[in-house]
Image (cartoon, rainbow, N blue to C red; front, side):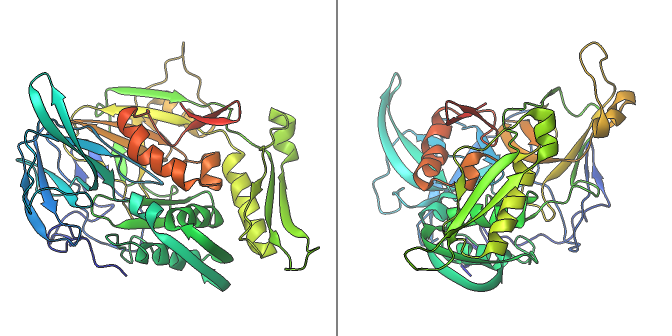
Length: 444
């Protein structure tokens, strides 16, 4: 396993004491959640009244501290997403330090808040150093890639010829990187086994594949310290986060039908290596859903040529069908001054519920699990998909675990481009919800 990222500086050592999940409350945010680990849980603090300046700490690619950068000319908006990690950021500096301790491509930058709790809120790799001339004169921009991009750049070639726990496959992905790590809490044993031949691919593609082998409740995430999380979310117990009455200023909810699929063909590799060997395949075909919503086929079919075991392919088919054959609510919530930063790396998953005082009868009709909100109660448990931090304000996107067609057939080049370029220039409300337009994926 790779060493923890800058142990003692950027490492994952927990402070003594703290709050045990499920036992305490912090103002308008209560903490709880399932899991066998009674570890201290201290949420990072966040100023309620103002946006604190960032401090940028510079390290070499070999994790040797070089200097503190500054002063920063900007305070970038930070965002992190489930099934990914943090998004790219740009730091503007007034001068270019060309000395040996100055920033260089491949170096590591950690951000903390001046006057904050000292905890890292972002760690990124310097991808580019731009020399700019603006109205106030020349300045330098450091373009930082999040640590999750290391998974996309890590070469992976492993043939699991015997049934192997998918958690071990995830740990092997982490071991293929330079700066990422994991803990027994972040990647516990899954108890789900598969045979799979990952040939000439990257670790990000492997994580996406084993996530779907695990089922619709599995997720992964690379946090601000470089710790990789891979496990199932638990939505049946008390959630980790509870937004109480008056703690948020805006809530939007929608439930589109455009992503529902109820007929899915999943292909695999050859049964044998002979010239006329037949390819494995499995079909998800839900007649009940088709009678209600019509036949909604996934086109083109999905192919996992590395799946050479029929049982593994059937598991993939069932889990993909269970994931795609459902209406997926999307809830957007704005929290103006919580005082604690919402983080996604949590054992049992970043689950949340929120309080709604009442249903507005002219505009809302709730049924099923949501009907309890009519008299003013807590919502069902959801998963936090996106967090956007803009000063003291945090904007959340909630819903079931995110899924896109791109998740199933992962394109390394497109994903890295999305993570390292497009999102920096045109950040969407959420990268986890897509609609299909003319056969293409488009962010909503």
